[in-house]
Amino acid sequence: MLIGAVLLGCLVIGVPIFAGLGIAAMVELLRSPVPLTMVAHSLFSGVDKFPLLAIPCFVLAGGIMGRAGITEDIVRVMRILVGGAPGGLAVVTIISCMFFAAISGSGPGTVAAVGGLLIPAMRAQGYRTDFAASVAASGGTLGILIPPSNPLIIYGVLAGVSIGDLFIAGILPGLLMGMLLTAVAVLVSLRRGYRGAGEADGAGLPAALRRGLFSLLTPFIVLGGIYAGIVTPVEASVIAVLYALLVGLLVKRTLTPALVWEALSEASTICGGLILIMGTAIFFGQFLALEQVPQRLAGALTRLTGDPTVMLFLIASFLLVIGTFMETLSTIIILTPILLPLVRQLGIDPIHFGIILVVTSEVGFLTPPLGVNLFVACNLTGRSIEQISREVIPFILALVAGLVLLILVPQIPLLLVR
Image (cartoon, rainbow, N blue to C red; front, top):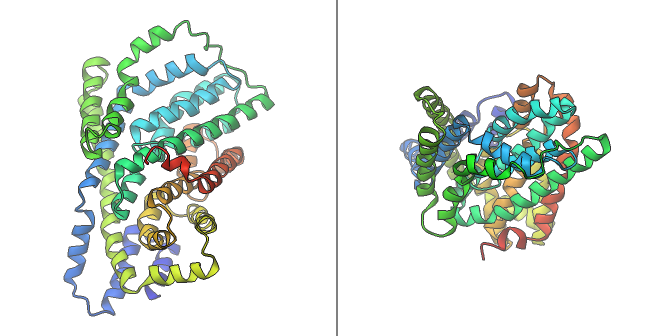
């Protein structure tokens, strides 16, 4: 198990994920008769996957839409619809995150786009800054579950599962998690006396709908073709970019060449790092297979229990711990080749497992020391991560409750797929 020890050592001393994966695999390579040419072949074949083209396009589309002002249109409509509820702005924040998640596919991106607008509004209405930040950070977790979801695309490629089916499977769990987070926001608001924003009378709804019509149609245009079987996820991602450009340039007329360049730079930075991790992870996974690590792990765990539900609880508990210090895409890339053979052996649907994997990663967005969404919220508010972490605990418990429900009732993610 030298390969695992080297990887763990690299992670402990702070070596970047892609470098740690490559170093661990190279150490094993030097001890094996495998030719060095396998390195180049693995790095290339690891990223030579057609479905991966959807990720840069969805990231680019989300960046363009955020800069075009589409987020403001969504928030305006949601404030009118639910702003008058107890803790109205907190509810608006979470529901807006759900809607924006169907555009961006990114957790931190959702926090930045929606939180940047609504955290100042909540503070102006008398909400505690820590609570406002925790609401935005929690709502942003929905960005990786509600389709389009970049982690689901990565998992689909690694697991050989239809990405379209994974997107469909993410709808009901995404709505469930959104409802649980909204319930927590309402309960906390009632206890603290946070009132609605007084905008739920519907008087301005027709005007807001007319003004934001093209923005509100975005997720339906992007995802409708996938669910109807008209386009593939890759084709839908290209449509998303074109639609975002059309809305920003011709409808809202807010996009400038500088803003488009910013979105392109952001997408290339994110996806460049992902390509490095994917290539070295495939290389790493091949040596795990040579060492029969998945088979050994499966044998060890099945000696503990052969019950699929109990096994999912064990795996989910492990993933919740891993998620506190390992980034979401890295977790999925490293652990999918290890855990998937065990999951298939026990008869667990790979689509169901993929949703569980992503939901545990949602919790990781809110748990220090990594807690990416917490850091975004800290940057938006100037508060410390310790202050926000205390306020986010009820939302973490809500996500864990939803995770338990998804494990016990696999029909929730699989209902629309079958």
